Length: 183
Image (cartoon, rainbow, N blue to C red; front, side, top):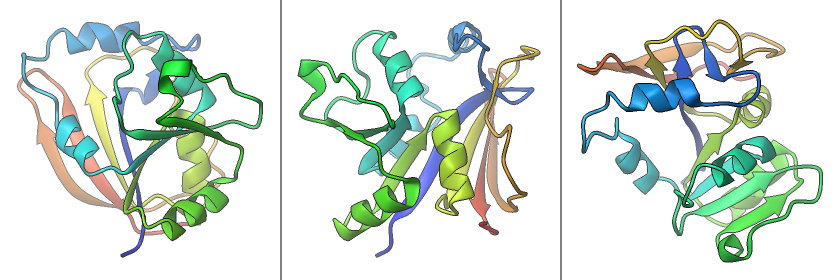
């Protein structure tokens, strides 16, 4: 079996994953409209994931949001600089300065089946390396005008095949795409 790398992320209607300062206040407000018990497919998705790979900025942001949400899931934080991992997370969180290709190859050799790639820069680096298989984007019905773009700065076009779209009664629209042309 070959290793699959997936993206599962929310954006504003205008394609931003956070405000310029990294704030997710707009997402927190939108999540208040989500009915209790609705996870927009996140729990089944996480159940299919062996390892979560995120960038340093995403890791540091998650640390500020309250209790660690990934429980015992293996997490690798990509950063070229030294990284301080809280003592209580050192069993499951590891640091790597490998390139996306090096990390992908190493995890593939270890027999993992699915990676969850998170964080704008990390997602773009994996896309540019041709390592992403599928992308699920949940569009939140808000326009924030400016912020951190999910796909801003890609060096070339990446063609996608639409797989499915789900419209939630509370306004979220979630679409899944398969990558059909990798760089």
